[in-house]
Image 1 (cartoon, rainbow, N blue to C red):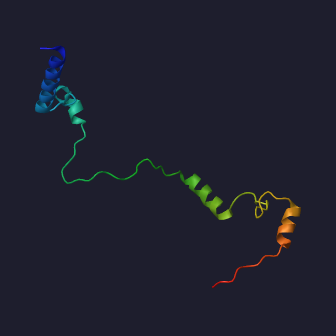
Image 2 (cartoon, rainbow, N blue to C red):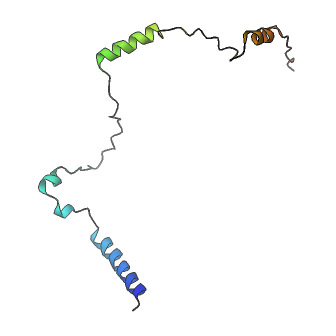
Image 3 (cartoon, one colour):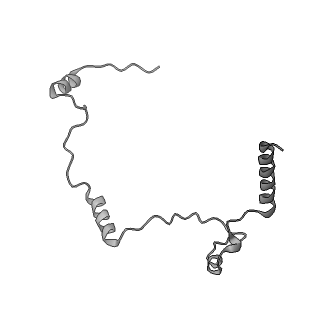
Length: 105
């Protein structure tokens, strides 16, 4: 037999044996403690969908957040953002321009 045929035969035999014996991750060789700590899935139970990564802040932080929500920001925004970064003269010209609205049909 040629080398490629031998490799092909070995691959087929290996795949057949792995399907027959059901390759496991070393469960037969696990210690009794590892077997006891194994996660077992019971029939009829659903997956835990609760997000347990969210942490509740301490009461002191909750109080601080509540006061900030009531009072609002510490400083008032005094910047006029209605016309972008245009100068005062451009703003006056824009407000002085007349415009017409198209009539509705």
